[in-house]
Image: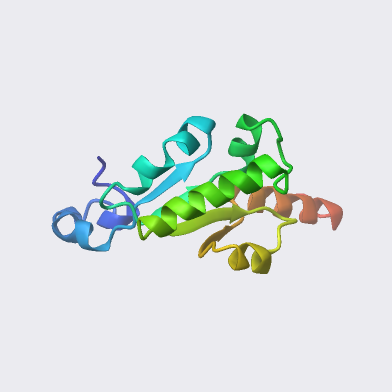
Length: 137
């Protein structure tokens, strides 16, 4: 528990933040291993959880089909997580990989779609700067 984060004004508004945080926080839980998949109903039933987020890379690794998000094991896992999310009134989420089609996953019921990571954005920016012949920018 840190009171020196951006949310607390880096320590200048910690009391105000702590007094109202419960009203504005979003609770996202990530399913990224077979154990989480087996317990999806219990996880989705937890009061206060807003989003069930599938970690496709880690989950596909655990299911023996790393990176093949169209594999039947992954599609079955998505369907199980989605059914539990619907049953318990939770939003379904994921991180879109570069080659994933947002419209396809939206059609599959995903509404919390994250795009990119901090490291991925840094890597892309550095690669573009290097390719442009200006690696110091």
